[in-house]
Length: 520
Image (cartoon, rainbow, N blue to C red; front, top):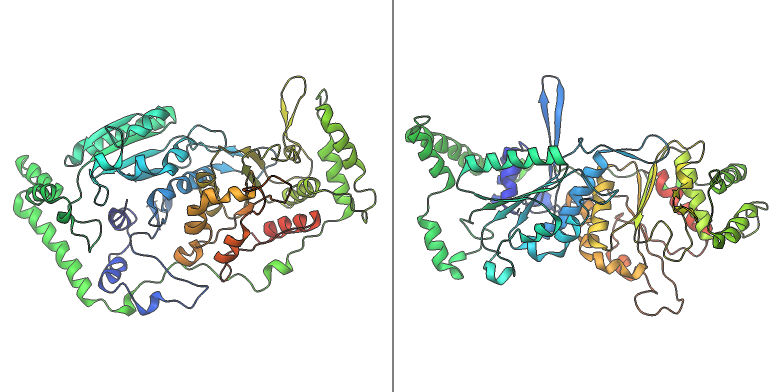
């Protein structure tokens, strides 16, 4: 989950060794300080990668290693969101269609972080929720029996690091990391279970950390006894080489020759590297100058009237809640005189969504109580007053060319925004929106905001276009309901990492939504 990512980058994602060796040789390189859109780059352990497995002339499989910050478990919902987006088809009207067989999420956890970080349980809670499930995830705890310097009895109240998963009915297998064959069989079992049942599976890979947490760490300061045992213990490679020799598959000299060969290659590359050898990073493209201002956000009045009529139409026999009738009657005549200020925020939003869908851009909208709206203003999903059956107008209007989904999210901000961020990064051509129940509650997602939404462009070259709606006002509800904490976003704004708007009219809201969709 930390330095082990380098192994994955080079031996699974096939990244050239030189790309990491140069950062070991000189981590403060001239080209790391880029005068481009505030580019900062990131440490070698945090970088992501993509790799295409090719069979003949066809791509058999795409593998993506998502970049993640030092808050290692924060990437969990991001990966789940990416997998959900990869398996979702949105090019027709109505509900989006999800195929769980398109993508397989694999998440590697730390043994101290798995029970310790709340975002782990927040993400596990999504595994069977409509709109969030990915058809199963394989989880691997790289169990070093140590969390930096903290021992298990200092890190958790449970016997096993994996016990949290029991609450979600996830099968758990504990396997000895010193036994490669057992590990492979365990991985096969995990995939077979996921493939058959479409549910999560957890592998507790019980091993140890041979060196310190990082290059400068001396683990014997805090665990002298443990590291005396580890120093005297053969490595996995040595144990496996001995087993191969016992089976007459590969003798000791042949095994040593393979190791020496690669050590020579790595040392030779390391010594010959210069700052000019650092590979080009995957920087994001500079957007066209004035792209947002050039986006056409207006919609013909007659088109809006047609859309409004379609949105107000109900299925035959559908009984609307009597308390909604007056609001719907107001909507019927709201566009009679286009110059009158008769369009409220909910109607402006609904018309914006309808026009965006008609333009061919799909919409995913999530948040706590998002379907009805915290303030009972949206009612994007109607419930039959007699039967309880639901009807979503934006999924049933003519001329729409893309799918629309709106979901009530679980009661968390951090994992939910992380999920939507991942969905957005995987499918940047879709309008992805998350709404806070109250704008002030955004501070529950401060880690995801700081480490992904605000800084991903500068660190990893990602270009998120996620929309965050933070409803707030001075309506007498007191602390945590009045500010939206916009000052924090203003403090984090830099270069072109985000656009912050405090709308005062429904028209502004309408045009901002259409502008965001127009620049995707």
